[in-house]
Length: 122
Image 1: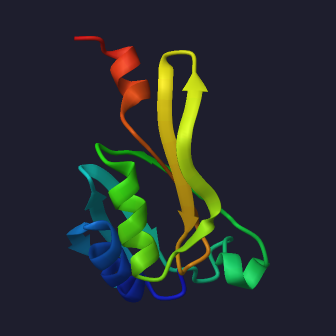
Image 2: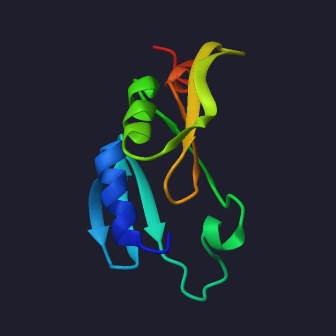
């Protein structure tokens, strides 16, 4: 992220992220209960997807309602054309998943909690 503050604001608006702490160039957030840390490159051996010309990270999250999660992201500027949400056949049954590219060039895959449910049957 070339601007951790701008990214933090977008994640809050688009994904409902809550700020845990803020050190300026490094920000701790939680998204749907999962911790997420943002950092700005500063001659520390890594750079942004824009500077490198390729995606540098894939973020996967499991939420109760992946359709709404993706819709909120797309409505606030994400590119939802990379992986349309659909049902996938998985070893544990049907898994609903789709994705988007956030305004900072990161690929997000968003699925329902079915893989977690398969690991922890009630």
